Image 1 (cartoon, rainbow, N blue to C red):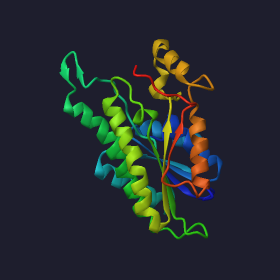
Image 2: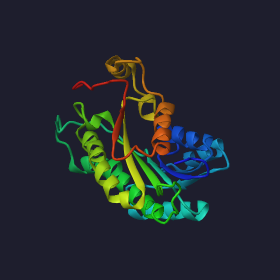
Image 3: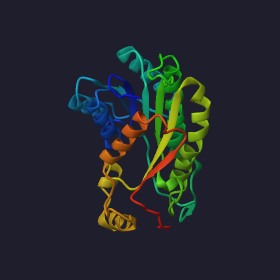
Image 4: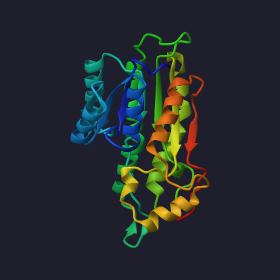
Length: 256
């Protein structure tokens, strides 16, 4: 799919991986709808990246909030072709800690945002994409890109909720691609390693340095622009479908 003149819905678009992807779409001649819980930051980002960007307040884990956001996107742009799901949260807690078992509400909160929120958004975007006229000779109408994590494969101590949520995103990728194939809509997932995002920016060296040491090459954290480059390739290369692609410098996470 050629990105030029296409409309991309990007959750978590105000910062980090989402913002980098939004900037890439704009640079390729597309339009972006930035969906974020932080409406003020999303609007600031939209103002900074250009007239073809718009901000929408959205809690991806809330059905009505997501419905309202997608309705707003369609009212503003008329259609949508690309959905990149970057919204997510992380929190560290053991299955059983010093204060007893992990509270179920804490586990459920991570699942709701990272897994349910991803599916909530993609299902609404897919329903809108179904109404598109084909944009390629092969009949393509849309593409969905989800964000998992290497923690979905190699969760560390304290990552039980986060790893479960990202493992779920990995697990839904192929069934979603199969469900939507008849409509000409593709679905892939990117599983990033440790990236230089707001989630990591405040981490002390005692946390950052061992992670960097675990990367095979290059010995650094990932750049959000590298995520955006892969997202661009997935959008433009129609033979990417039903896959989860690790983008991690060869890292394999140790237990801690």
